[in-house]
Image (tube, rainbow, N blue to C red; front, side, top):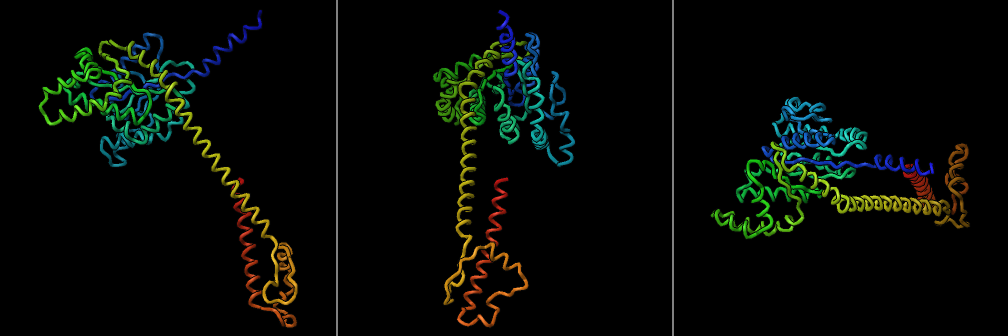
Length: 382
């Protein structure tokens, strides 16, 4: 009866080794309360005895209201980058993020060591949203994390400022563009619900007629354009996870964590199989290229073996042609005491000297070509 005991204890250990905590990338417009939301979420998880692992990717932030495990400011001096490269604020942030991305493999190493003991990984991004969402470094960081861990984007929206239909539509279009660019699970987070409830936004997203009524109050030329865009975004709304939170009071944090759990399921069902398919296609493409190179090499070697014997005297020489191998010719060339037959005046009668010289030159060219092929063959095999 003591036999099953080792397997029972080994199973949790294996599960712990394979644990993949979800990565939450917090993205939002400047002033949307993104960093405050991070602080509240961090406090909420600590209260639940699930302290998260936090990465700060904003090099220009003055003071963080939470302790970051990895801080870009410890690696890159934002102000020094601006001074050295003669850049403005946005250029300095982008360059600092690019420099940090070159060492992101080390960041992954730190995260992997702690992953078995973690439940959540939080990533705070720069307030200038386009610097992360539309830069090469932002894409590299997102794709690298998503290739290893269930990664999702939490798009923070300033609810009071979204009360106008035009502002609401602008936020929805930006959220849609980020979703289709990153292709990872997406959570729409309406922040500051303690100031204004997000119920109006939910109603606009689910009832086209209500949004139309709000547009009728706006007599600007943009109303017709927004009507068309609202219809186009109907599919986007249908598959969107929406939660309302308050970073000040902490309301809605449990709803947000439920949305995170749903996003993990979506990652496993949709994103991960697609990622594995792309990786398999890339592997098969590399294998096909390798086989093609090997086939080309074998073909070159086969042609090389066929051309190793040549005949002399095929021109106007009246005697029978004699087949000689290239090795024999090389030995004859190395014998400096014996002059070539075409220099022997006694044997020059009846021999086309021009044809013989041409054949000799062709033979040298073949030798050089053979030597080059052997060199290239060795390089490919290495």
